[in-house]
Image (cartoon, rainbow, N blue to C red; front, side):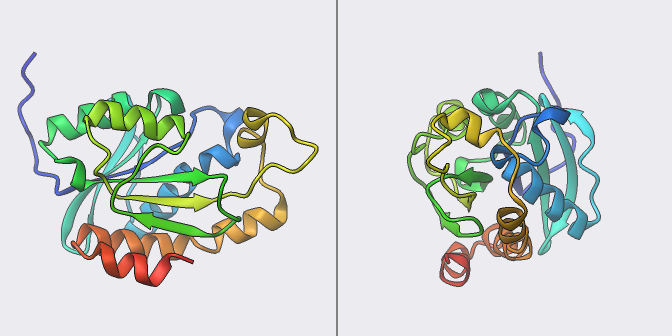
Length: 196
């Protein structure tokens, strides 16, 4: 089926997470939470069902961006991201992904222009869908599971503690600023300013 390209989009910004009330506020949904904050700052409602995702269009630093929350569950995130990138003819370098990282302390950010999946199934799916790992990403530290929490899946799907939630949410304005720099082509400045 042929889809007509209805409106140009300069950048795709994706927040990763799992849909459903039972996953709200979980470590694995840090990407959803950060994207919701960005959408709020831009006055954008991420509610239109498209590409197996909830989407919304906004302007960020003079660029047209499509904000996206895949509804495919984390491990199949690439289905939504790949479909949108193909539709808007965006190269991987114009796809920014926000997601949780258990290797970073809560609230730490790690911005990179590319990289491997590092064991993150959502990123693994996106790399497969785009056929490349050359896309920018903002990794959001959510902390490591404690000694008593042996199962990784249980940890990433569990809710933030009040302390960790405060540390993570405190960086959402920085994530918004970093996204603005990245869509403007200044990823180096974003890394220099916010990788801490």
